Image (cartoon, rainbow, N blue to C red; front, side):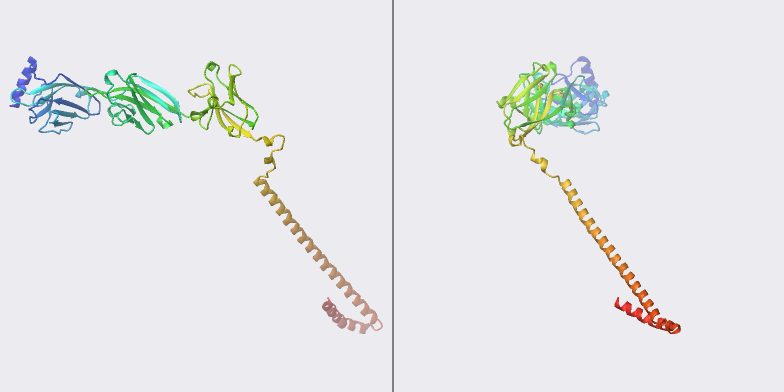
Length: 426
């Protein structure tokens, strides 16, 4: 029966007598990804078998059927409520491009709908818009959108793969805010804008703006964003006194002669307060073709802080100056700064160590002198004892001089007795 139907189908193709529910369905898919082919059918065919085939739809050309819905590369599903059956072709290759047929089995000739599949590389785009910005800033990426797609879904993703862009979207027109990202769809201007705040270097890279289309590939435009660290800013320090006037000089490029000049205050240049608009004490005038001057009539203590002056509203590097202002009270005028008399902790510690060293050295010197005195006293005592001993010997010899033999015996016995007495008395 199937072979007969195939023969009839081939014959009908030749005679252009194939029954078609709709016109040719055009489908485009990306190499390596999947594509879905959706075909509708009339009421009354809900229980009939559906299939997808190629070429002449011979027995070898049928790719998948609802009675055998899952193959290695193909999968089919029949949604009977809206009467649409869809076939998914996965892992697309360039050879998969060509003509297909959606078929609905019935008695007699089957119902066929022609499908034209186009396979392209998963890459976008020939034209890339390049944008440069700096860390900490915000940026607006403008994405085109044709009038016929004004009600279509808009989105943006990172990378350069259209096939996965919608699944990996950072934000869409259905969900207009997501963290640092916000999407605004301006249908009158035929574009939608994606804002990114608090830029970091990690935000650098490729982005795709996408507009969804129901029966064909989504429309994309590519952007390359480069985020750099803010550098090379001219900086200066200046000081003034409360109640006195102060003059700030700000250089600027000669080509900015007609640009609006500004002076603002704040730790960050992208969130500083305009001092020329909000404070009457600050006045500006051009001093030359490359310098403008800001005069502060009477300084206040609260004026101390960080200022930024320049001539470029886009805050490009090299077109503005960072000024660090210090403000001192009036009482310091004509007087020495009390801070000069404050002894640094390190110097105080050195002084203490020197005093301790001198004190310990004097104690050591006293101890040494005492030892020397004691040694001298001992020496003198020994000399006195020696002299006494000599005198004793001398007197003994004189007493016994009349009898020599008696003298000698007397000396030997009596000297020792006297020596002992002297030692004891010492």
